[in-house]
Amino acid sequence: MRRDKPSRTARKVALTVVALGAKSGMDRILPPSLVQTTEALLVASGVVGERAVRWSRSQRIVSIYEAFDGILPGQFEAFARRKAFCERQVRDGISGGASQVIVLGAGYDTMGWRLAPEYPGVIFFEIDHPATARFKAKGIDEMGQRSNLCLIAEDLGKQKLVDVLKGHKSWDQKAQTIIVAEGLVMYLGFYPISTDGLETM
Image (cartoon, rainbow, N blue to C red; front, side, top):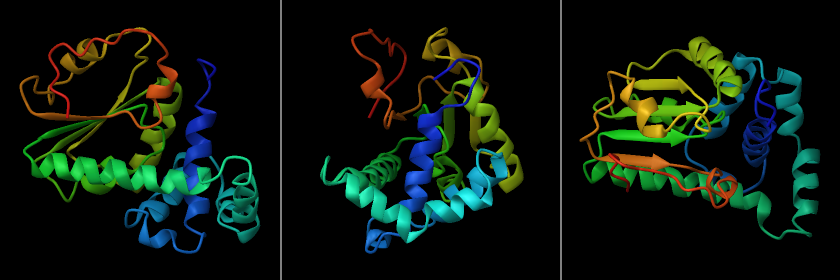
């Protein structure tokens, strides 16, 4: 990702979610309202227009994704299963006593926005590079703010996660916390990451 440009990968993943909504049987796998809220966020944020959303949910695009499955079998459906898995883990963690959720490299994911009203006692923190986060914030403003959803625009390549969180009054260092790094870990390579002061699940 160029430092001054929003993540193309985040946009691609979000449009893939939209396309998955048009694939037969995915409604049994995808979390409820994920596709609809993703579509709404993409348009409200200005990342893409309504025409691009309609194109992404067309059967022609679904066919293209399925054709690529011939090269990497299961890749298309894997996005749906990954989204569903992450959300199940978050829900299970909250049921187990977690009162904070951190989503690293949140992109245009809508899990925090969707779950925040359902779990008013949980604080959801979403952290992403400012170039992407500013578009996300615009979309969330249009869709409606959640009092327990904190959008944080920071470059974690320049600041430690612990230092970023300490700057927010809603952050409780002692609270049981879930950390979601969906699609992010693969980019970390061999760089060491410090989680001092964080309890992960």
